[in-house]
Length: 264
Image (cartoon, rainbow, N blue to C red; front, side):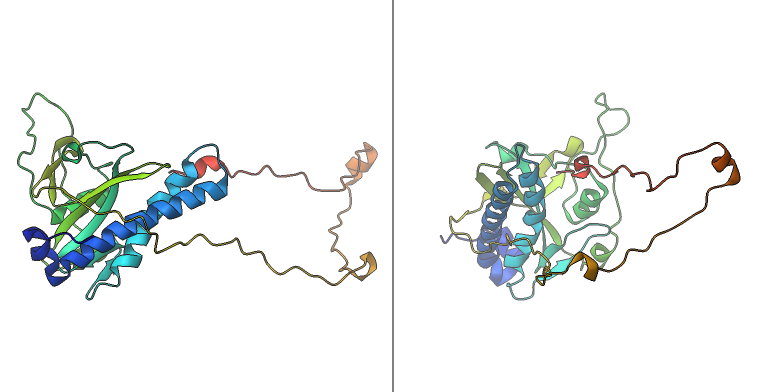
């Protein structure tokens, strides 16, 4: 589906604007397909598997598509697990703004993390920054200096937001545009947020079977096995006098890992 490029997209991505737009939509479709496949394979009663997979895939599947654009490069923000794509003068940042269809013009950034603060140094300045005398004592928008690879991005780079709405059942809608970060994580759009075409075809399916190490197939009798190493220690004289039972094995150690470590 071919759509005319807006002036701002041509300014940011040059002659590749239409291709970038198409590939962003395709990457989001692949993201959703892979996240749903992970959820199905996990057979979980909750959507945590979907959420974790969706979060990872929103970066990785877009990167798969966008790295094919001439001149594209991957940028890894400081202490961030994933890479963002820099194409022309545009740094793309995808995020889910809703689980249902809703007005993207009222969308908020999900969090005001250090990463978000650094990314929005490449965005327009907000129209209003709350001063201490305002009656609304909500949080102001702090500033942050880009670190790591973000500090090496050329001047003139613009942050291109890619907000999308989805849930474990379907990918609902997606947009892209340029916006400032206002108070209370509210976006102030400098361009009209444009809808992205979301194709039905999936071009990147990364769900792989779990690799199982090769098992020993030859029969080994008990007598042929490796003799275990035994750790022996003598009992103290006081233990012997008190007839303390001999300890034959170490006490079990409780597993400290937890499913609650998952965050998405």
